[in-house]
Length: 487
Ligand code: C2O
Ligand code: CU
Ligand code: CU
Image (cartoon, rainbow, N blue to C red; front, side, top):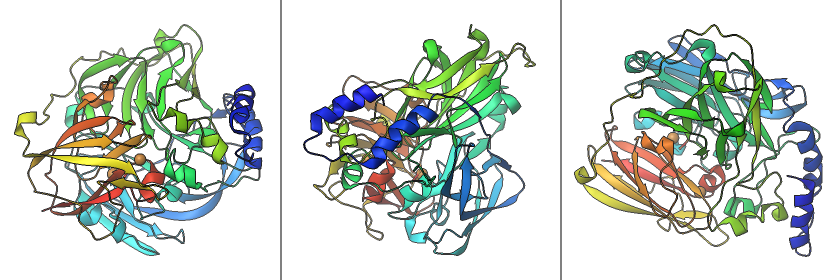
C-alpha cells in the first residue's frame, strides 16, 4: 500500500477506528520487502520412494535472510516437500503430528476413500496417522494441507502445505517442459511482526468478511524472490496457497502466456491469455516463453481486479485491524532474470492437450442449490447452517451426476471447494464469464459476491463422509463447511 493511499483511507474513517501499531510497522516493512527481488527463489525438495513420512512440527526458521519466524513445518521445510507420483502408483504416507494441536492431512484434489480424505473428525492430537491409497486419477498439480475443524487456517498459515504432483503417460506424450524447465510456485501472503513472529490473529471483521490478508507476499516461502531462467519455454505450476487472498496473475507488459492445466490436470486445449484470476486453493499450469521478452528480466505480478459489489466493505479491512493491500490491489510477486542462452531443445506445443470428457448437462440426475450467506456477527453459512461434525448436510448417490448451483448472497467472495470429485464449471451469472482455467477439471471455483456459479460433477468416489467448504480458510474455520455423504 502506498503511504498516500493509506492516509487518504485513514481520512475516511479516522473518527471511528483506532490506528493499530502493527499497521504502522507494516508500512515500513512493505517498502523493505516488497518488490526488491534480493532473495533467490527456493524450490521445494521432493519426496520420492514408495513410502514416506510427513512429520509436522513447530520450528523457528529463516524466511530468506530477512527474518526468523515461529512456524509449523512438514519435514523441516517451507513449503512442505513435493510428493511426486505416477498414476497407478500406491502412496504410503505416514503423518506424524508433533505440533501440539489436533491435525489431519487432506489431499486436495485427489479422489481417495473417506478415511484417507482428512475429514476433520479424523484429526489426531499426537502420534501418527497412516495413509495408503492408490492414485487412479489424471496427471495434475494437487496439494496437501491440514484439515482440523476451526484451526485449518492457522496451520496452513504457519506453513503446513505442499504440492502433490501426479504424472501419467498421456501427459508425458506431450513432451512438456520438465526438469529445470518445470517450476512449482506456491503463492501465499503473510503478516510477520518486527520480532519475526508469524502473526495470525484474525479479528472478528476479518473472520466475517475479508479473511486474513497479509502484507508480505511469499513465493515458495520467500518474499519477492528472483529466479534465473534461460530464454526458453517454462512450465509453471502455480498454487494459490493463501488463506484468503485472490491473485490476478500476469506478467509485466502484459506478456501473454498459455494456460495448459488447472486443478484436475490438463485442459482440452491450450488457452492463451495475459491475466488469470486465482482464488485460494486453485491451481494453474501455464507455459511462458521467456525468449519472447525483449528485456533481461520480467516480473510476475498480480494485477488489480474488481471485487464486485462487495468492494465497499472490502476497503474497510485496514480500518478494522488488518494490514497489507486490500483484496483486488495490484503488486509484484517475483522476478525472472533471463539469461543469454538456452539449452532447451526446440519445443513445439500441440494446441490439443487431452480430449474433453466432461459430463453433459442433460445427463444430470438432479440440481442442488447451495446458498452461501453470512450469519450476522457469527460466521458464514451454507444453506443456512454452520458445520457440525456428525450431521449429514448433503447426501448424494454414488455414481450419480449432479449440477450444483453455488448462490452467493453475501458481499464477499467465496472460493467453493468440493472433496471427492473434480467438476466442470457450466456457467456463471453476470458478465464475468469463465476464466481460462475453468475450461478444465476443477475442484475449487470462485463465486464472487452476488454471483451464481453452476458446476456439474459425477460422484464416483467410495461411499462415506466427505466435506465441501469455502476455501477462504477463515470462512471455513468459522463454519462455512458442510458434510457430503456419498451413499
Ligand atoms: Cu484444500 Cu477441504 O481443502
Ligand atoms: Cu480438498
Ligand atoms: Cu467464503
